Length: 61
Ligand code: FES
Image (cartoon, rainbow, N blue to C red; front, side, top):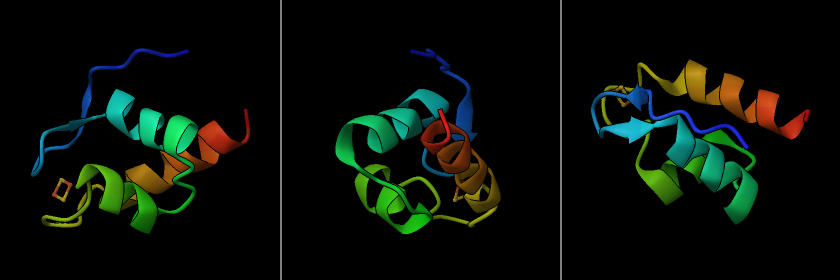
């Protein structure tokens, strides 16, 4: 598994790894579900496209 501590959501301080965990281990397959689980994307919304990309990438593995 990847271990990326890079911050994806600056507003909420959410790392790529936390988002991957939500996708892989909590069944979050949409941005909305990832946001509910991690709070990523609930601030300015500027990271939403990147969350979408991470979801697509992880689900295609
Ligand atoms: S950077 Fe994620 S909501 Fe602003």
